[in-house]
Length: 76
Image (cartoon, rainbow, N blue to C red):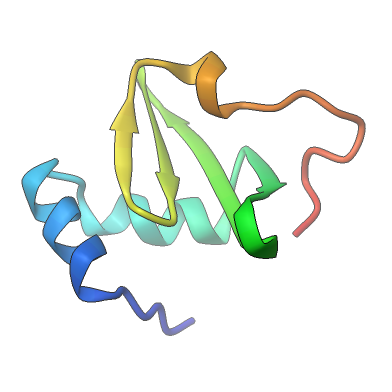
């Protein structure tokens, strides 16, 4: 699968030291998929004590802020 990452996301990936493998793994095998603004697909995957969401590529310890709970968690 080819993954196109826009320049601002590439910059944030570098700043946050997110391994490229995490990006591919999150997109290929997400723990959760939700719909974001403007119908974007947001894939979540938890790595150790951090969570990565690949859209803007960020690491967070604020899991509750981004995770949603519903019946259709894995919609991809």
